[in-house]
Image (tube, rainbow, N blue to C red):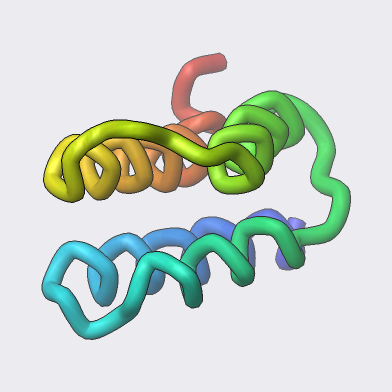
Length: 82
């Protein structure tokens, strides 16, 4: 389970740094797209985040960042839903 604990700690750290403006979106995108495979329930949340970060979105910057942060939070909280 250490791998899951590491994932959650990393996601929480990325989320906090991105929220505070200490990390650029491109860095977050590359980090998300570089994540390996994880078991359910994390796999579904990760797949949704990867799909989002691969896409091009025509929304304003605040809405884009809000969606990014929601998807990161969903990864972190995926294990709490079961």
